[in-house]
Length: 309
Image 1 (cartoon, one colour):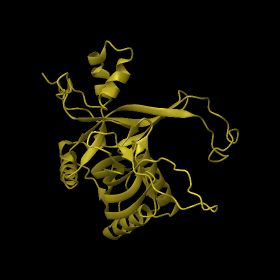
Image 2 (cartoon, rainbow, N blue to C red; image 1 turned 180 degrees about the horizontal axis):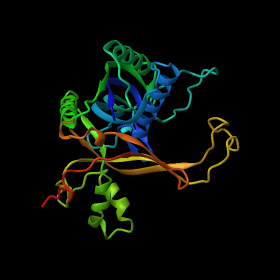
Image 3 (tube, rainbow, N blue to C red; image 1 turned 120 degrees about the vertical axis):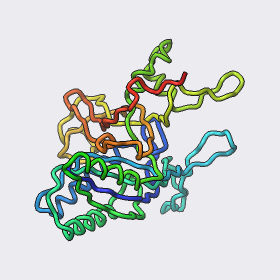
């Protein structure tokens, strides 16, 4: 990775807050789709003689406001739905339940083979990126504001590069960056060894609060802000030829039916990260086996995890 694009403080309204069986922060697939769209539009507009190759995307959340309501303090959250205009028969249309959230995020998008540029070319590229970003949607939501768009070239020497990364990551505070913790999903299954499906019980155990018989909250067996997250799709059907499935998005692309793939993720403070590549999410696919995943290579500094005695 020769450099990165820093999109600071993207304010997004009405982003999709539902992903499979989870709700809250939008799925990471939305952000990689956003990155892919940006890469294609930069290429189409011929901003540079050599098209940029974007290698991955890091997501830093500064604020998240799910559009929900509660009837009482401890009741279930319900999504706040919009009332749509009357139909031509002057009747109230049916509600389509959708989960929405307002959020402020920053994105770090890795660049492979960043060509040499002078200051004016950097400025032109940054302005082109900003113009494109403000016309796109992110997780189905409307981008209302982008504080800054920067293109950063990383130093060739490792020590200088490390200083650059540390300095830049601190500029994204306050905020939390999402990384994958699949290792927790594997290593913590012994806590649910008596269940019929320990992997599912481990994942589900991180989506709820646990209390003892006296109503006191139980501490989890490990530290960290751990949450269940969707990270892609697994095929549940063969790959159908283009145009053979009715009502598909287009007739030029092969189609298959899929289900969400889930794992565990952790929200970390960016200043705790030393290697920028550990923050980036990227595509990892195996179409022959039916896997379409978003992968992240974060490695916990504690190889044996942080168990609580």
